[in-house]
Image (cartoon, rainbow, N blue to C red; front, side, top):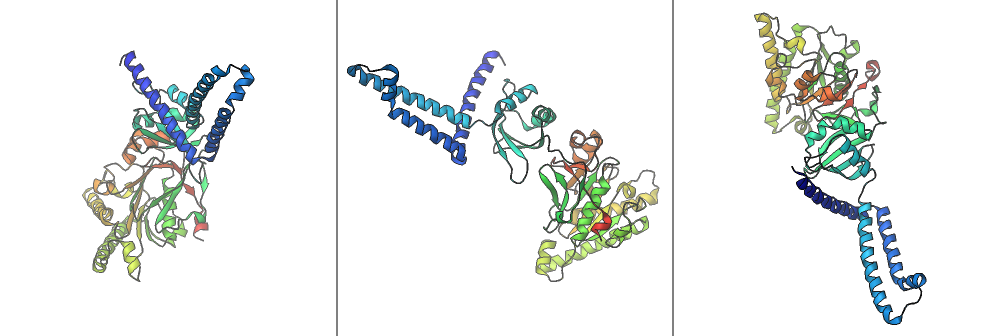
Length: 440
């Protein structure tokens, strides 16, 4: 693109930006009392000056010839009207310009966030979300796609000294919304669970706390969860947090833990079925699948589409069932297995696949945790039905396997524990809790 074309585009963009500022200024006058008062004060002042224009001219220029007076008075009146309109236009543009607009614009320029014509995005307005410290920056993108904003995210955060919680598109694809918080409001490294955090909604589970507030997942809508991440990232702690809430909400919980059961002390055995022997696993899965088939018949005969509808219409409610595995690779990894071992693992896979495909409507859920859920561990018919995927600390490859992106590698510090990111990109810190206290 030659310099003449760039200049022509820049002039057109500047005119458009002035009109945008004016339109946002007008909106602000009708929505912000202080801006409305500023405009009212200007109009009152202008009206007073217009009414006393003769006296003002006489004070500054003295008496003038009466014949010439009408012409001067008309000229001054016209000049005043034009000046007042220009002043009004400038005032509205000022009111439509958010604080820090120039510094934000210069910040974008410093990090190279420009389009092919060398134009920089325009900050249109800033608004604060209720009940949190999140400030939403609405920006005219000037043709810069959302993907480029994501790529430049770390640079923007450093330059503007803030955290970008998420990046979304506005009412049109020409607008970008940056959901930001000041840099001082970083997530705590350690958060402790409190009983009042338990959600009152049916089977909404609390995952942790983000800069936007608490992060939830409703397993009535998103029935199965996959937890991944490198060793020491906090998968087991998050798994226990979810299962503890399931127990408090009245679910029947089965936990497969083939690491000796050390992560689930005796207090868990009183509230759920703990499976630490591989020999009991197939029997448990068969029992769950049998229950699934029984529920099919019950819901079909009652004319109900899902478990919640059935429980609303039938006096004898059915409990939700949750099957969890702390390290699913321990039961599904076929590496080094003989034929009998591979056949046994295939049986596990078939049962888990049935639950993954059909469990949603019948209130039967999977929560599977593993370090590396690749195709050698999780078959496609299981993995494809685990809609809620959450990743802790991970490298590029592991993050790609779990989230289909490198978000976990890019966003979670290498030394972080208990910090996770789901598929929607919201970073959160999981809660710690005392098992003996919550089950006491």
